[in-house]
Amino acid sequence: MITNVKSATTKDVFVTGGTGYIGSRVIPALVARGHRVRALVRATSASRLPPGCVHGCDTFLQLVGTPHPSPSKAAEFERVDFVSARESVRAAATANVSHFIYLSVAQSAQVMRAYVDVRTRGEALVREMVANGAGRSATFVRPWYVLGPGHRWPYALVPLYWLMGAVPRTRERARALGLVTIAQMVRTLVRCVEEQPVGERIVAVPEIRRG
Image (cartoon, rainbow, N blue to C red; front, top):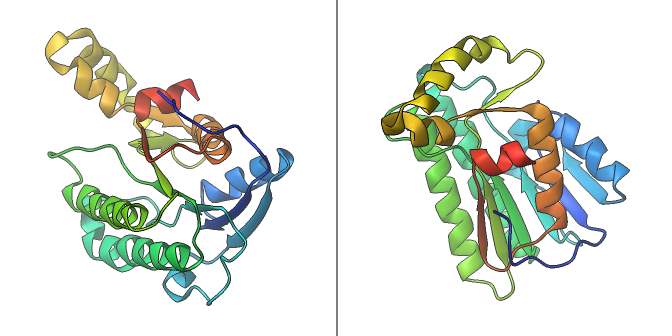
């Protein structure tokens, strides 16, 4: 649940991964709501953020990630996902950005361990930045799999999710690792931009589904 938030105003948002699967949809939604957006459009450029490019922004939206993550891409998670998180945190701290929104992943100890580990370490970097700066806050958005154009194969798992949700022993796991849609993600990220928390906020799958 999103609570303890400041009132929504026009935001100056810096977005990494702006042309990606999620970023290309979030940016038009933010602009349509009247927010000012700067975007780093090449995911590989996140490790070379130009000095000063984030200055003047109050919100940093970190969306860089390896496309179509799978267990075989562990090295890419380190090279792309973790490095981009590290450099984005560095740039945001230097620019004294007040709100850092990090696209993380639902926490699981059993599947996609390398991916979850990299995102968990990315969250730790953001937390350290928040702890070291007065007035800073962080939002961690934790989907598991985002359904949309080109990302539809998990629909085959819907019956399995239904069965897991019907069994008390697996119900919570089904909720935590549930599927969300790209429209739900866009609505959630726009709301996260507009409603800055005090301190830390975690937005998990059930909250994403509610938009």
